[in-house]
Length: 71
Image (cartoon, rainbow, N blue to C red; front, side):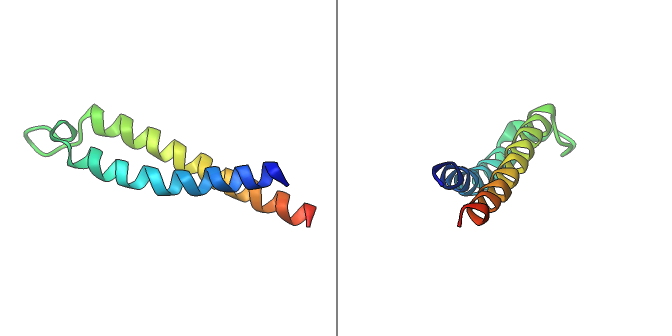
């Protein structure tokens, strides 16, 4: 039960934190070059944030499945 709640809190926390961080990163002057193309700065952060959100989804799914199995 405790593990399920921890997984759910982790998933929700990540979905709250990472999207605003991406918006700030995308608005950063280092995110685009003079031609407006995405720089490595933006690409690396997008991959990191995407990975964190994917892990959040996995965490939420396993949290729900664990709760359903316990209840």
